[in-house]
Structure formats: C-alpha cells, structure tokens
Length: 203
Image (cartoon, rainbow, N blue to C red; front, side):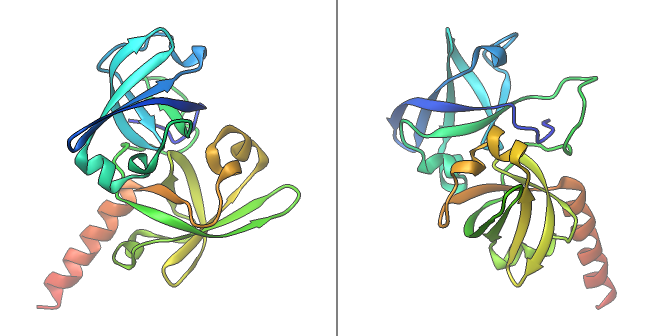
C-alpha cells in the first residue's frame, strides 16, 4: 500500500528490452535506499513495481507486457524521470489517501492553467470510467494523491500547489502527456455496489 505522497523524482538510466518484457533501472536518491531490498514494492508513477536488483544506487524493476500497455511506463525512454514512493509502513503518517499502486488507465493532459501560486491541470479520461470521477473525490495521478476540483463531460481537473509541483513531475508536464490514473478503492467499491443494486432493482 501507498499513501500518494511522492517522495522523489528519479531518472531512468537504462532499459533492457525483451519480448513483451522490459527491465527499468532507476537511479535512486540515497535517502530512499535505506532498508530497500529485492522484493520490496516501490511505486513508479503510481504503479506498484517489485525491486528485482540493487546495485549501489541503481535499482531495477521488471515490467510485464500488461504494465507496459496500460501505464505510461511503457512510453518512457532513457533520461526520463518517474515519481517514486516507497511502500507505506505501519505507523506512517497518511498524508494523502491509501492507494494500491494498481493503475486503471491513462489520462491525457488537455489544459494547463498557471497562476502565481496555483496550477490547474485538466485531464481527459475514457468515458467508460467517468462514473468513478466524483467532485471532491480522491484520485491518484502518477502516484500523487489529489482532489478532483471540477468535472466537465469526460474531463476533470485538479489544483496543484507549488510544493506539489516542485516535488513531482507535474512541473514539467505539458498538454498531450499521458498520466497514470488510480481510482480511490473506496470510491470504486461504492460506485460498483450502487450500480449492481440499481441494475438488480431494475429487473
């Protein structure tokens, strides 16, 4: 489990390609290496990946075909960066909301409105998943826990404070970029339950 508080951005320094399979090697900041062992879970742009190898500050992750297809990790090239979060521990502060690291889809950035102390970013979602997008609800975007501020058709927006911009990839994001989306598990459960009940009652 993760909290949606991105701890660092880190650079992808190597990609090892195989058939329907890829290994990413990420150069970790030293403060995220303490206690890290092979088999540990780390969120890369919000996607839960397993550490397969550690060589000093170089940490390797294996990505299966489904992960490459469903997330923006499959679009990365050497030199690109990712948002990182180590798995949550008992007694950790939950500053965002509980997240599983299971990406449901990608969303495209369609509009960015910048002001002195705020940045509003709009995203286009697949229409079939908009029932999970609720005003003032939680959402995970590239691993960051954020609050939905407005919804228009199949788009929604979030507001990003300077601190969030500085600590994450959002500062360098541009229109047309794809971000990873994780729906709040509680929201998904409630929406799915209500839809099943309504479908049953309409028989």
